[in-house]
Length: 451
Image 1 (tube, helix red, strand yellow):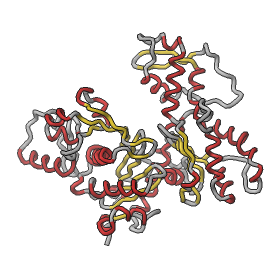
Image 2 (cartoon, one colour):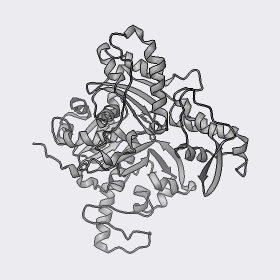
Image 3 (cartoon, rainbow, N blue to C red):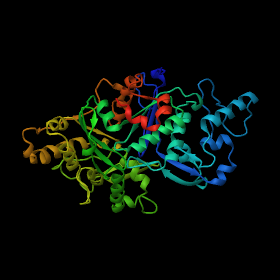
């Protein structure tokens, strides 16, 4: 008999190439993810790892805080603090079972500890995922252990939490099996589910069919979902995404003499472009809109100082998401059309009428209106061959209004969808994989369960 788990213990982990989100407890689905952590690992130099104390080296966090269901050592603010003998023994046991990394492998550091670390102590950094695929499985294993133990405060030695992993689309079966193995063997999960983010995004927006446009950090992926099934053969993808906007914005700022002169070395730092992109000042305009006067400037605060940037630059940089500057890069509307036409004829009208935009780069003001204008004025009128089944309108969906806690976070629809699915699927043994099933059949058992 499979043990049932309470919603308070359900854990959602959404893996992303740039940012990973996580949360425990889906009782209230109006709560946003509690963990937002960069999907990057720092490898501590060997001599630093050797000299470090066990508490400091295990999770590479200073100060060290041990989170436990029944006790918390909040006094561990430095290495010289005295700990009663009984508590010290328990702490050592917890570190060994819950946090210790493989002594034969590299020692990793994550999150704020990596950002604050002395550069002289870091040998190198690793992007755990790129374009939706895992680069380093050892780093991912350590990363998930860090999230579970340090960010969520779960003890691996007596882990009773059911896990739902939200993954990018098009992972091969072998990668899903690797993730299942990490979940059961490295974080001691009792039960797990693995689901693809486009399907979860459609669920989050209240649909089961539609085109999901996921505009992430290093890729933009257009995925058709038909009747709760991802149409893998019709997925379209481009590298024009958030990172491309950052690069373009940096180039335009560097080319603007008036902007350069505001910096001491007459060079615009990349961090300035990143902060400007994320400020909400970049706006995508509709065709025919009067171009901004290059002499018109926008004030922007950065590093405690006030700068001015051209409004024309702010409009041109994000425009590459819809109209790339490189002829070799596909236009976003063409990718959407390609994805729709790859599906059955009788489903295309429903796809056009259910478009979901998610991902961090989908937040640019004016992007949805621009894409809808381009689709309705350039793509749909040109598709007369499909007149009997083709709609002449498009409809963009967003989160239902009754999810008041998610207002302003429509780009996180996949995470909301994961929370909704978890409430139903992680309570039903027909949908999740248990440890007993994993032990009997191995990692391939993950392909036999779905929702």
